Length: 311
Image (cartoon, rainbow, N blue to C red; front, side, top):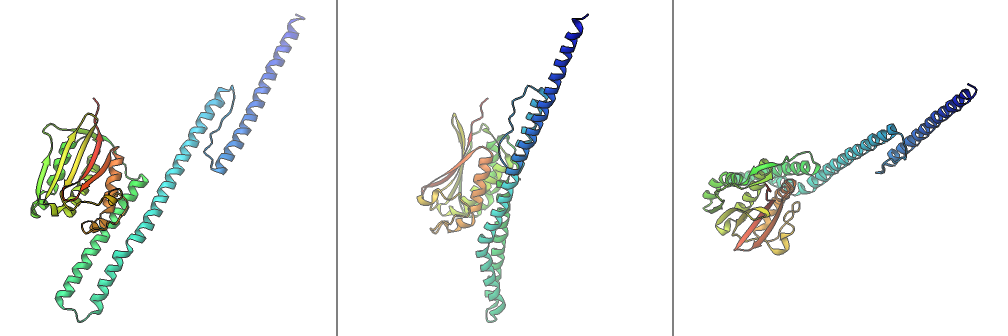
C-alpha cells in the first residue's frame, strides 16, 4: 500500500504534466496560426500555413485553413481578372468606337447644315448613317461577347458533338446568300458521322463567323467551301475560298483584336477582327485550335482542329 500511493501520485503528476504540455502546445500553436494567418491576409501572400504537430485536430484544422486560403485566392484572382477585362473592354470601346462615331457625326452634320443637298443625296447620307449605326451596334455587341469570354462569365460546357451535322447546318444557314451572290459551293463531308468533344452552340458561332468572312471577303474567287476530315490524331474543319487571300505578313495577326489589314480585300477585315478573335477564343475554350493558310487566288483556308475521340 505504501508503494501504490507514491506510484499513483507519480502517474497522476505525469498525466497532469502531459495535459498541461498539450494545452500549452495547443495554445502556442493557435497563437502561431493566428499570427501567420494575419500576416498572409495583410500581405496578400500566396503562402500556405505549415505547422509540425502531432495533434490530429490541429492537422485537420490546417487542411481546412489552407483550403479556405486557396479558395479565397481563387475568388480574388477571378475578381481581378473580370475587373481587368471590364477595364480593357471600356478602354478598347472608347478607342475603337471613336472613328465610326466621328463618321456618323460628320454625316449627320452634313444632313443638318447642307441645305443645298438634293433629296437623293440626303437619302444616300441617311442610309450611310443607318449602316454605320448598325456597325457600331454590332461592334459593341462583339466587345461584350469577347469581354464575357475573357472574364469567364460565359461558360462553354464540353460534350460529345456531331461535327458532320454542325458543318451541314453551318453551310445551309448561308446557302441562300451564297447562291444569291452567284458563288459555287463545295461541301466535302463524309457520310459516316464524325464526332469530337466540343460545344454545339460555340461551334455554330465559329462556323458562322468563318463562313460569313469567306463569303464577304473571298467572293471574288467565285467559290466557297467547307471540308470535314480526320486522321488518327485529329479532326479538321476547313472553311475556304479562292479569293485574293491574305498577305503572309498579316496571317499571324488576323486573330488579334481589330487588327487592320492593308490591302484592298482586307481593309474590311478591320471590322471583323473581333469576330475572328471571338472565333479563336471559342475554339480554345473547346480545347481545339485554329490556323490560317493562304495562297492568293488559289486557296485561303481557316482550319479548326479538335483531338480525335479515343474509344
